[in-house]
Amino acid sequence: MVSIVNTDQILHPSRLAIVTGAASGMGAAVARTLSRAGWPLLLCDMNTEKLAGVADPLRECGDVRTLAGDISDRRFPQWLVTAIGHRKVGALVHCAGVSPSMAEPARILDVNLAATMRLLETVRPKLSEGAAVVLLASMAGHMLGSALDGEIAKATSPETVGSLIACAPTPQAAYAVSKRGVHALVRREASVFGRQCARIVSISPGIIDTEMGRAENSAQPIMEKMLTKAPLGRMGRPEEVANVAAFLCSSAASFMTGIDILVDGGQLSAFSAFGTTG
Image (cartoon, rainbow, N blue to C red; front, side, top):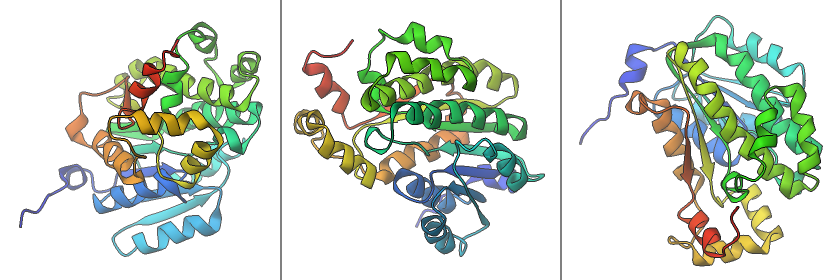
């Protein structure tokens, strides 16, 4: 039997991996995958009970700590700094967010984009050399097209994200704009991270078989059509997204930064076939 050794952790045994939205769905899958790879973990989520349910079994394999709180809470950055302590952060996988059926437009923009900006500001000084930040965006950001890129590019700070409500009046539009904003954020921050010998990328999942993914699939009929026409013809599994995130956090992806990785089983190509992209 071949044993795969995680050289990242042998070289940097004290580096911490932070996972937000870790209580369920893709965040929980990322937590389990990084745990198997030997990372010490700080798992964050606002659902205390579910967070404990994910964290407790992983403690048998290594150091796992938790931080319960809403990432959009203005106190969250200080809570996170306290939880990190004197440790260096080797990886951040930011999975926390809200979907169109979960909130109104202003809340979606605040959680998915403004809070993400604040999270980067908080974690950046704590990053170790060679660290990687992976932000979960969405296929919806690609589906939006480029028509609003000029307006999205103006939202360069948490304080200016609210201005995007003018071009995102519905929850569906706000979600797509927020995730398109994450794509722009990654491109904009890549040089800053590079000067710290760190990397930043995003992953755009398609329709994934999670509670959130199933809810949105039911609420938006176009999603079922996309699944039917997509090359792989099915929802993705959370573990399939988690495996990509773990790769991006490893030294095997050391020359990848400033880009978005689409993990959708070809679902976007089905959307494009409808002739509705921008």
